[in-house]
Structure formats: structure tokens, C-alpha cells
Image (cartoon, rainbow, N blue to C red; front, side, top):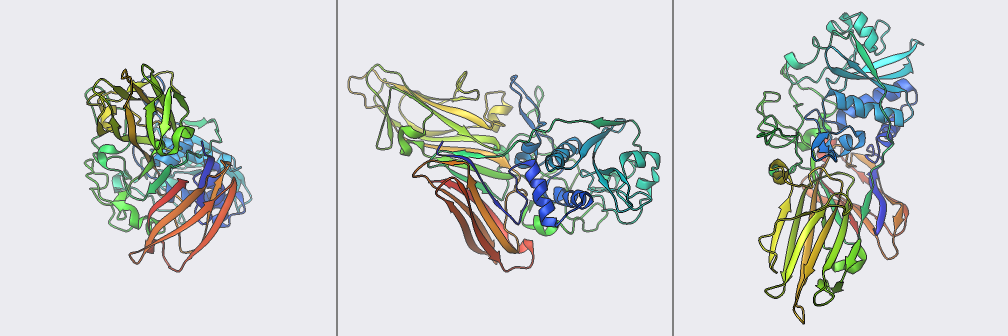
Length: 505
């Protein structure tokens, strides 16, 4: 890899590098000093940056897809979840940031809260319970955030709450969670493992990464569930995964007023069929892609080559009767949604070439279907459709290996791959990407390792008053670089983010 441990951010927006860093940045942005202040600030930002929607399924290593219980992937790549996953991510963020936090599952109702231990203004140290999925918490008789135990003992804290609580962000009155969550008996205290994972980009020279601030096409998006026999989609989300919190609530009033300015430019209508938001504009996870032309970089960017020669941006066999094999390693911090390959291969009639993908470091691989193994030009893709057809798919992978194999029996081989363009789509939570905000934005770019004669370039692309603007940070050696950009606008919705790019040059 030319660059290892690369990441970018904006000091004015919480980082998506790790769960703990997200929480620490929230504390800093809110000016929170006490554990109580930190817990309340985190609740606000967590609701701002996470979405309520379908749970994530990922490849489980056993030939199928299972629910993802990795907090950082759920938060930064998927961005969605039901109550279990919101609680799982919240507890991971807070514990990694140094607070005492846990998940509490209400067994009879199957609902999950997270609790934070701190001393309130009343001087009492206790657990305080938050319900981010429903979007609220309630106060006890002392005016502090109540614990699950206190709510269980006194259901009136929920049924007839004291003033000062947030409005539940229920999409309909009957689904707002007020009555349904009032019976909190049989609590289960969950002690979950804390992983301390970090996101990093490991890039080869020539790779360009684009984080887009709009959704992926429905037929190329990451899947929303593990389909059963004969079931190829989640009918509740026919266009892919999206949130179910609209701007206007089921009561008819505007909800999430503090968050809407951050969401306004990034909400799209859906073909929602389960009456959760009636098709109104809601948030989606973002489309992203890595683009790369590896042949232009020669042998240096391949992880393994055998009987191969690289000549002026072309790949040719080393000679007659030799089996040529070249492997490329592609690694992402986010979950892949599709693979697209554009190629041009020339040669004689009896020449052979092929493409394969491995998800386990070349211990096994599957061939990508070509119309012919004779030289030709064309394009192929792999992704959601293959997963639905129960065929091998890159969907949900964070790492895979791409193989080119070729052979010629001609005395003077003319076989050559003279063009290969690789595109890898990925899902990302665009509400966690380092967007620009009104006022000062201190943009940063870092890398743990950066090879000699290589550079990293980060670029923020945005519009103000329909005029496109770009701001960037460059890095020519391992370490960190910063640039400050000041935007003279008074509301986040006056800034339209369209992309954040990262290039290894």
C-alpha cells in the first residue's frame, strides 16, 4: 500500500474514525465538562447522526449473512438500526470515551435502552436511561434523567412525564413508544464487549475515493436483510435502506427542529409501503466509490505477480506456455456494495484470460462471469443482484482480492490487458462524514504511513447559493496536515455538501 492509516475530518464535526472519537468530539463541540453534560450532549448528537431503519446483515464467514454486531461498522457505514443496535453503538461510543455506560434490555417488551452512570445536579450518583430509538428520555421526581429501574417502579414517569423531556420522534402517534414502553419489568443488564476499532483507508497509488452526499441507486445499494428462500427483497424498503423519521410527525407538527437544518439538504422521498413515513422525504445512507486504474501504476501496486510483464500501462504474459497471474488487494473501511470492472483485452483467437475475486486472501476464489475467455472488451459488475440470486457477491465485504489470469500458446504472444478500470461502491453514513458548517472549519488529513514520492489529497466539494466551491488539504509525508476554511453563512442548510474526496497521487 502507498498510504496506510489515512483518514480525514473537520474539527467542527464529530469524527467517524472510531466510536470513542465520535463521542469525545461531541463532548468538545458541546463544551461538556461533567459526565452529565457529556451524556446529554451525546444523546443530542447521536440522534442527529444516526438513522432509524432496517438492521444490517453482513457476510458471516459460514456461507450466509447474519446480523452485524460491530458498532463502528453499524455507525459509520450503515448508519441504521433498531433499538438493539442503537443501544449497542451508544454504549460502545460512551465506554470508549471514558464514561460508564451499559445496555438494558426490557425482556418482556424486547426494547433496548442505554444507561449512563453519573452524578446529577441533585448530588445523587445513579444510572440514567436514554432511549435514542424513540428519541427521548424522561425525568424523575428530582428533575434528573430517570433510570430504567425508576421508570419500572413508577410508570407515570412515562405515561404522564414531567416537563423538560425531548419530544419522542415517533413517526405515528400509535408508534411513538409512549405507552408501549411503560412496562419495564424484567430488565436484563448487558455487558457487551468493547472493541476499540478504528476506521482507516489503506490506499494504493492512483486510487480515488469519493464520499457522495446522495443515496445509491436502488439496484446497486447494500442489501437490507438476509433473504429467505424465495424472498429476494425487503418490501418495506423497496428502494434500499432509509430512515423512517420525517420532518412532519404523525401529530402534524414539525419535529427534530434542531436537527432539520443539518438534514434538510439530504432527505429524499421513498416508495415506503408500510405506512411508516407515507413516502415523505427521509434520510438515506450515502453512496461512495473507489476508482482505480492499476495498470497505469505497474507491478508496484499488485500484491502478487507471476509470469507477468507490465509495459506502458499494459499487462502481458512473460512468454509462451506460461500461466500469468496478477492479484490486487482492495481494502475498505466501509462495506462494499458493488464491484464494476471495465476492461479491454487484445490477442489471438486461442488466447485465454479471466477475472476472479477472493474474500479470504486467495485461499478460495470465484470466477466473474465473462461472455468469453477469449480476448474482448467489455464491462461486468457484481453486487446486489448476485447476492439475491445466491451467487458469490462482494456485498458486505470490507476487503477482497481481485485476480487477472491469462495464458497464450502462440510463439510470439500478442495477448495483453491494455485497460482495466476498477470501481468499488460502498455504503457510508453521510450524516457522519466531515461536512462543512457555518463559521470556522478546521479540515484535517492524516496518514500513519505514506510512501516516498506519494501524496494524499483531500477535497471537500460543496455549494453555497448554487455556486460550487472546493476546499482541500494535502499531505506529502506521514503525519497530519490542517487547513482552515471559514464559511460566512448563518444556517447549516445554506451549505449543500456534494462530495468529500480522498486521492492517493
